[in-house]
Length: 67
Image (tube, rainbow, N blue to C red):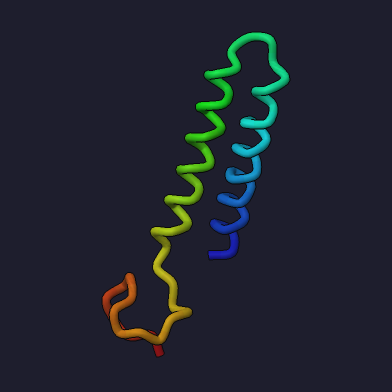
């Protein structure tokens, strides 16, 4: 879980870096910006789909109550 968080945090920050870098490029600004946006979106989607046990509700992502 920690390794996946670190991996997707690197992807998230790398995507933000690409979006910022696109402003200073002469060519391919749109392609670099869209690539950064896709990387940020994918990293957030993968982190949100991880089932967590931090909640005590019975209706969590895994379908069973956390203990």
